[in-house]
Amino acid sequence: MTASMGLSMFVLFAFGALGPTLLADLGISRSQLGSLPAVAFGTASVLSLFSGHLTDLMGGRRALLVLLGTVALAFGVLALADGYGWLLAGLVLAGAAQACANPATNHLIAAHLPPERRAAAIGIKQSGVQFGAFAAGLLVPSLAVATSWRTTLALVVPVALAAVAVAFTLPRDRPKDTGAARLSLPERPNRAARWLIVYSLGVGTGLAALNTYLPLYAHEELGMGERLSGALIAAVGVAGIAARVLWTRLSGRLSDISLPLLVLAGAAVCFLLLVPAAGLLTPLVWIGAIGLGGSAVAANAVSMVAVVRSPAFGATGHASALVSMGFFGGFVVGPLGFGLLADTSAGYTGGWALAGAAFLLSVVSGFRVRRAVAR
Image 1 (cartoon, rainbow, N blue to C red):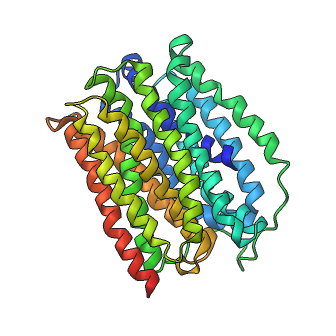
Image 2 (cartoon, rainbow, N blue to C red):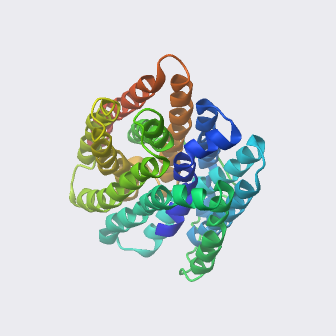
Image 3 (cartoon, one colour):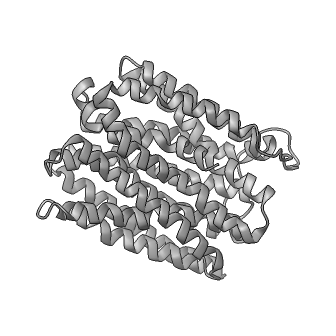
């Protein structure tokens, strides 16, 4: 499950790390670069309306196999792409895989683990996303220089196929009796779930902007080389791995799940301020990257603990899908909004202001989640 989470989101980190190379090779603008992950996560956001129910109908193991097979197909298309249009087609497939990630893995955890072990398991599997960020930041720029960006993306295909083979060893789980044999839209979320969706939208917007544009910002504005710029994503990933494991374990023990949500969103606002400040003192960008990995990255994992642990948010499968929909919606808004602002006179300052406003939205939503759960 950890590998599956990493592979499902790897496209975001890979395209972030390849940002300078793609701009030079394809001649695209910064706003077009932002549209690439936005297409993937826009697809994921729409399909998340159905993926929770689909997972309940299929079972978590089958949904995980579909996810990994789709990842392999998506990166095959991306590696063979000879233009912007084919890149978009590959990213639609990647978005379909992302929509299944949280519902499938949360379903398996709920089916096979006792309640006292679920929070820790969620932290471990969510850390897979940050393992992907670490691998992309550390390896992708160097591989692209040594071979090409297409060859680098093609190397993901055998990894995904190997994960498919391993996924067959997972224990079988019975699909839930949903009372319906066909797909349907999820029920309207309750008050607590609605505010958690908004919280995830803010976190997703800020994180997507960071992961897509931090290497390019460091390269163009701070004068850092392509490999060192890509290493910033690796720094976010390493911090995120530790933070997701630690914060999910802590959240599993707290009676008030909204408290860590508030703390992490507030910390993300503070650390984001250091990124534009790095224009005056370059080392601040490293502190900001590590701090955001330890705060904003962990916030999404804690929101998954909330929906699995607490009945206040509704049924696990549908609640996971709806909260994921908000998160993926942020991954549409973040890269597109940042890219459009970066190509205007507002520049990178406008883009970072957008990310900061998104994290502030999560702070406000965190307070609303707290009130709704208390009720």
